[in-house]
Length: 205
Image (cartoon, rainbow, N blue to C red; front, top):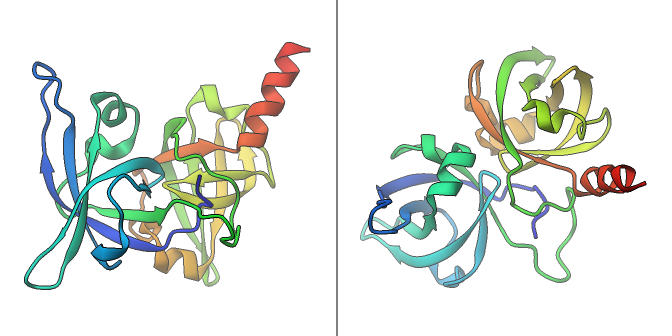
């Protein structure tokens, strides 16, 4: 589990494609500021909202630490990971540990769909971002509710049909990949777990 509080921005350092014929997953090597000795093999790390398992760690002579994760064809096709290139920025958050502060909301790291940024508008020192969600997810998104965008815990400020708006404060703008977002940018979306279960209960009643 995660909180949606991004700890740092990593970078895709290498992509080793897998193949459907041999069943290999695609391996992604991600550079990070976190000391490699603190990253355990088998640990879960949310990479722009996608929960991935660390399969390898290492460092370079220039002091760049990195970890590697494997992504299946399903993950690549259902998230924005299939669009990543070497140099792509990645929001990183290690898994929640018992006793850690819950600063955002409960995030599973299981992406529900890919949204598209339709507008980015400065509002004072902050920015308002409008995102078009897949129609199948729109009913789970409510004003003042929580949503995870590329691994970032955010509060929904407005809802207009299948689109919703979020306000990005200066700290979040600077500490995440959202500063590089523009119209047409695709983002990973995870709806609030509470909204999902409330909807399921309503369907059952």
